[in-house]
Length: 229
Image (cartoon, rainbow, N blue to C red; front, side, top):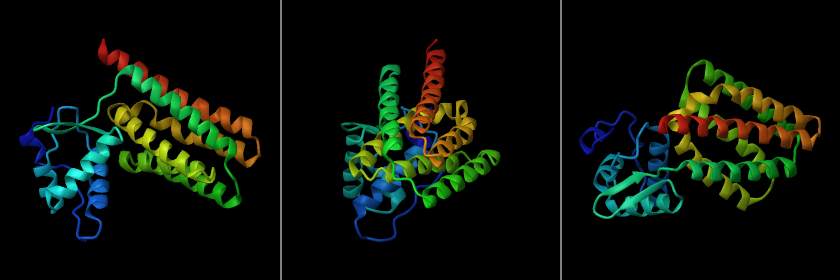
């Protein structure tokens, strides 16, 4: 558990903002990185005072950034108390993963695949293996999202990318404490998707994507059930 006193001893310092340009957007990005990377829990209180002091800016852009994060479903804001990480029920996790599966299966079925994209996917898999070996959790998670982002971007659908990014961010909040359950399966799962796309087999690529997401979902739901018991 983190109290207001202990949270001020920041293990992972929030990136300070040095430019006055578009402070709200910069505050949003910095706070988002912080809550996704740190092992905070639902009792960790994030106040405007604390965040503005860490970022070195006034409270106004911090307040707007928190409102945006609340709209995205990453945090909940309690009047006169501050912001807290959003928590998810087992049913909500199921819904998020089901939605992600449909979105990503659709993306891989319509993605405009070319040699450059395939090469980027191969490089991503290589980096993922390296980060796993180094036990670099943060960079592994970032690389995992980049791999899936390559496919989404190739679908040439901005709205799909926006919705999928939001879903993935909220799922990441669910997975933070159960990361070790499925991280090691990522390289093999990603390679199956890559191989199918390289062969022009869209059905196999879609099935590989569904299998990948389903595995992670089922392991996470199983872990949530055990924690509840």
